[in-house]
Length: 185
Image (tube, rainbow, N blue to C red):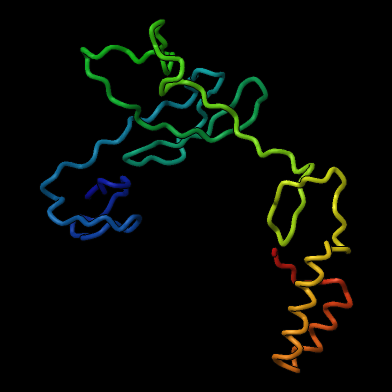
């Protein structure tokens, strides 16, 4: 039997590809089988109050277990995966992710960034979906555009009526329900 180096699935010796993941076995008979993680025994107690009930599946990269969370007697599924390997002479990883030194620049790369928030839309008008700063304190009414915009809307309406009679009716109907094309002058 050949063990897939990618997913750990067992395959026949004459198989050329893995049935599960499609990994090619070209020349894999000369390579040793992928080492998998040794499984934990049932009734093994783990940190955090978990107890292994049964091994569900085993691959080259992980083991899956049915476990009991003891503080509330809930059945859960746990995945066991190999952690990063450490060299014997390597120092253990610090629990603090970014140790700070007294001489470090407070505006350096480890400094917290300011929270970016959108400003409140109070005091702004929206014309055609564009937010602009308002100089007036009272909100503008959408039903009554300023006189310059009324003139531009009338010019567009006349142009549409003159250009194509089929669209003139649609432009007049749109004007009746209050939809206008506004342009900035």
